Amino acid sequence: MPQLPFDAPAELAFKGETLVFIGRLWSLGRKDARSTVERLGGTCGEDITPHTTAVVVGADTYPQGIPTAEALAADSSVHAQRLRRVAQMNAERADSIRVIGEGEFCRVAGLPDLQDRRVQHYSQKDVLAIYPLLREDHLRYLQ
Image 1 (tube, rainbow, N blue to C red):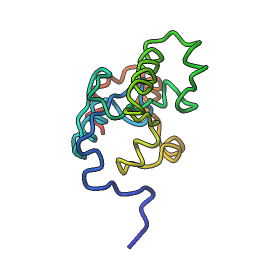
Image 2: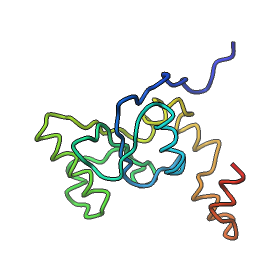
Image 3: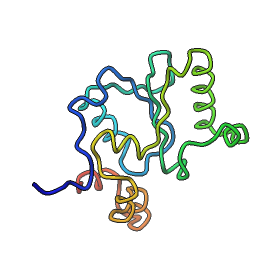
Image 4: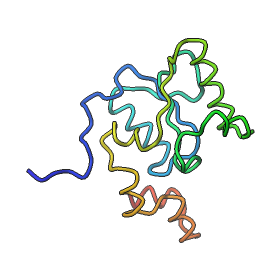
């Protein structure tokens, strides 16, 4: 049997989990990410709540990975505010919310590795920049 270039996901890898995505994802659209989570038994939230179990940090917004506390302190963006809120909630409730990068999310979900995809594929944002007349709904149809 040929080796897949990525790990197959556990059947319900996100069972019982509530994930919130922070920042722009590089490898897939928000809608696709949500359907992936739901397919693997989890749910997605819009905001950080006590029910949130994991936060996925988008690689397009944070290409260097999960930012440090020092970097967040100097950043006044909405994404940084949400990550600071996660850190505050984790301090109050002993690391109740996991913070993972988009690459880790892809690995757990059984999607190809983020670095491999960057070499092989253009992101949706890149394709839309290359073809300015192409709309997002056209791109979804092509997928």
